[in-house]
Image (tube, rainbow, N blue to C red; front, side):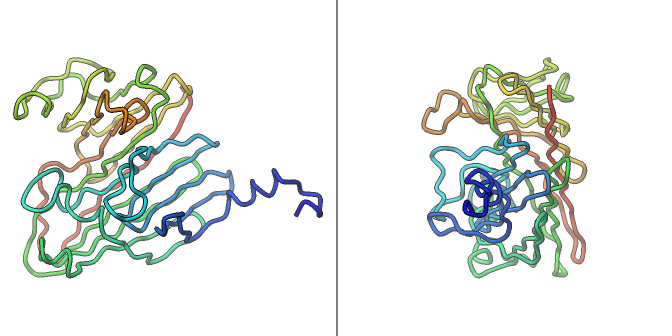
Amino acid sequence: AESRGYGAAAVAEAESYATGLMTNDEGLEYVRLANEAGDTSDIYLYGGVVTSYKVGGQEYIAVRPDAKMDGSKPISGGLSHCWPQFGPGEIQQHGFARNVNWTVKSMTDTTVELEMAPSDYTKEMWDKEFLCTFTVALEDDKLSTKMFVENKGEESFDFQAALHSYFTVSALDNFSISGSFAGKEFLNKMVGEGEMQTEDREEITISEEYDRVYMGVNDPVLKDTGIGKSLTVMNTAGYEDTVLWNPYGNEGMGYNNFVCVESVKFDPVTLEGGNSWTGDMALKAGDL
C-alpha cells in the first residue's frame, strides 16, 4: 500500500474500518460494526455482549482489566446480559444469557442480529420455550440495542432482564450521573441485607462502594469532565429501573475507570404463550 503512495497511517485507518466476523487472540468470535464517520462497535457472540463503542476515537464502553476474554467465564464488562434472572435466585447468578454462544442471524456493516434459543445447557436449569433476539445498530449519532424476548410455547413464564452496562470513566473524581434520581426510593444493597433509602441528590457522584437499585429511574446521563464528554442512556422500552454498581477501592477490577449504570427490568415480567417483550436501549455521546 505504501508503494502506492498511501502511507502507513492511511493503511491503519482503513483497517480500523474493517467490519464483519472476527476472532480475538484467545479464539472468541466477535462482530465489528463501523459507520462512515469511523465510529465502531464490537459485539461478542459469547454472551451476546457489546464490548466497545467508539465515537471520534473515544471509547465509551468499559471492559474490566481482570476480564476473561477466552470463554472460561462471562466477560466482565460491556453491555452484559442478565437474563432470565437478575442477581441471585433460582438459577445461576444473572442467568445464562451472558455465558452461552449466541448465533448471528444477519449482519451488515452497521447492524448485527444475534439469536439465543434453548439448548440442553439452558433447559437443565430453565426449561422454557423462549427465543431471544438481540439487535445492535451503529447509527450516525448513537448506538441502538434491542432485546426481543418471545414465548414460543403455550405456558407462561416469568423473567427479569437487564443490561449490566459498564461505561468508561477517566477517573471517579471527574464523574457524575444525572437523571430523575432526586426523591426516588432505592434499594441500597451495601447496608445490611439491603435497605430502602431515598435519594436527595439531583446528581450522583461515587466515593464509596455502590450497589443500588433505583426503581422507576431510566434516564441516566453520564458526565465525565476529564474528557469533556457526556453519554445519555436512552431506555425507550422495557427497561424501567437503573442499577448503579462500582466496587470502590478494588484495584484489580479497575474500579476508578468504570461505573456500571445498568438498564434493568427489576420486577419480573410474566410473558404469556405467543407473546413478546422488548427492551430498547440506546447510547448517545455528546460534549459537556
